Length: 196
Image (tube, rainbow, N blue to C red):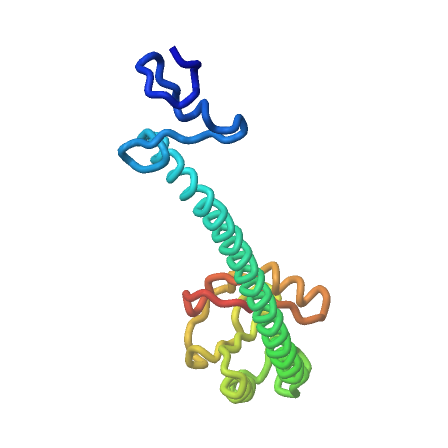
């Protein structure tokens, strides 16, 4: 019997191909799918899902973050615009009220009130009040200290007039001698929301 490994075709034990390779080389087995062993289906699905999530999750997170910042910036811009609009409107209303107060103070010093302001020359005062109300685009009411109307430009001179709803304001004006502006309320003559 010849020694083993001499290359003779002996039918004793066959030597495998891996044992003839140097020890640092590993020859992968060849299967029906090619040089690499087939991977289980579940493992491929898991790897693909992991790959998709690794790409998709950071993109979604970045999109949410960008949307939040854009919405926050838009909200800040809208609030700034509203504040600026409110400031401009407040200035315009203040200027209009100041102009109305000055015009009404001029009417209060009119000679038609005569020596007794509680008993003015009503026809002359009504004419002046109608003219001033037309210029200012307002309804003008002249009141006594007790809150009764002397006249209103909303109704004819001889109309019966009710007591005002703003008696505290009238008392404050007579006590201080200074103009005052009421809160929004229901007018005694018009029945609509207004301020005095």
